[in-house]
Length: 184
Ligand code: AMP
Ligand code: MG
Image 1: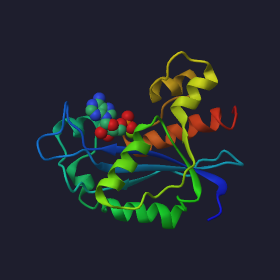
Image 2 (image 1 turned 135 degrees about the vertical axis):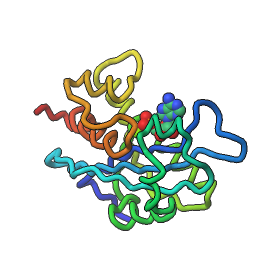
Image 3 (image 1 turned 30 degrees about the horizontal axis):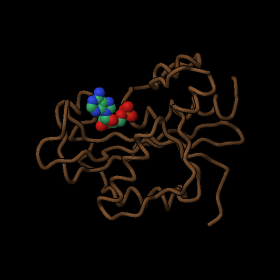
């Protein structure tokens, strides 16, 4: 399949979590896939979208609700992880497009969950780690979190941190600045 280089899929996932290790019998799994499509030529971001995913092997802890602001009600109409992967593939051509996320976490979580559940990984090989790229671009000694990274570029973080949809929107702005060298 030919690669498509017109748009980059900027993705940020939220997953079930606890203050420490998961309780016996539970495993961290994706509950939100935040997606912002960045147009390479123009640098325009499409409005970010939240794909809510119902957890199958874990429950939403109070800690996780506090961290992410995602409530059980918001997951009531969520789709299954396999359907979410189909959606990425079918509606966004995710296997042919470069995708980007902030750090390694999102890519590793996708790989881990796909393997554990026997679901085909919905991306190709081209992934951009925006956290790493930003640190290299700015000559930082250490990679920094998304809010710090945003402010180092003189951008204002828009929305709620740890909501996938808002994280993806802001990561796309950082990527536009760093990778595509735009300054507006
Ligand atoms: P983020 O993209 O930074 O919002 O984080 C993605 C996911 O990582 C969250 O949905 C949690 O599952 C996990 N996570 C992030 N920060 C923490 C934390 N301080 N404690 C436990 N899990 C976390
Ligand atoms: Mg996030």
